[in-house]
Amino acid sequence: MIIIYDFDGTLTPYSLPQYEILKKCGYDDDRLMQKIKEEIQKGNATEIYDAYYKCYIDILSENGIAISKDIACLGANQVAFNSGVVDYFKRFQSQTTGIKHYIVTAGIKDYVEETPISNFIDGAYGVTFKQENGKWGDIDFLLTDKEKVNVIKKVQNENEGTNDIIYFGDGLTDHFAFEYVHSIGGKNVFVKTNEQSEITYQKLNVNGIIDECFDADFRIHSDIDKYICKQIIEQE
Picture 1 (tube, helix red, strand yellow):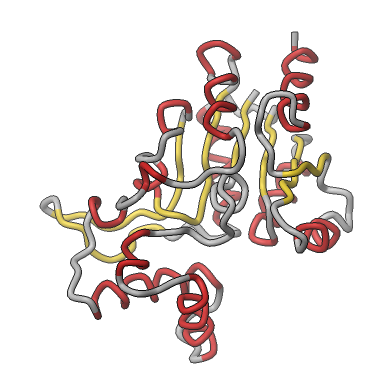
Picture 2 (picture 1 turned 90 degrees about the horizontal axis):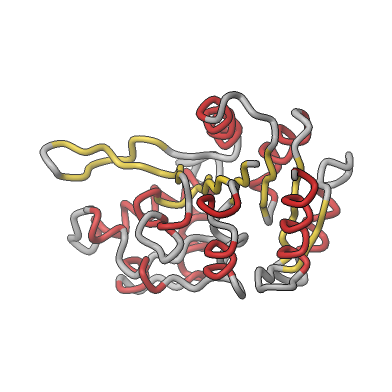
């Protein structure tokens, strides 16, 4: 069994990445979102994460900060997770359960790999930067909503083409991933994080592509915990 997770909003309580360096530059979520909207209105970007990373690079440049792994990963070791997430990955780690865990995110790959769950995941896919002589430059790979499908296919190929996949997501940016996993006979889990989540869930599940909808609670005996335990039992 393979479980693939979106990161922001699914494993964390925030719908957008929370990069410490942006906060140090004076950008909270509201100010950052306003800048993102302006980029889209100007026609400099066509979708939210394209605009997000244009803003990210611009903000660092405006503050005279050169992008590097240390800058990008600032605060990753203290990232806030939804209830029970770290212990959840410890409980269901691949060495003891046979489950493989992958993160597929529009966030920065290196950042995810510096978080407390990194030792319990089998692979992470996300935004990467061009590197030359140890220095970071422009974005090399932007993991858009549609690109998530290609990454899921890559994970399949790494695991003998298996369709035994569960995908966890929390928002409209997971639409293409949900559709694809449903099309191959996999299972989809929608993670509810706030009051708006129910509306988002209804929009995504018009064609019945989502199998389960749970609160963002990964603690032992939670609905998510019971669901994964059930999947393990059914495979035995």
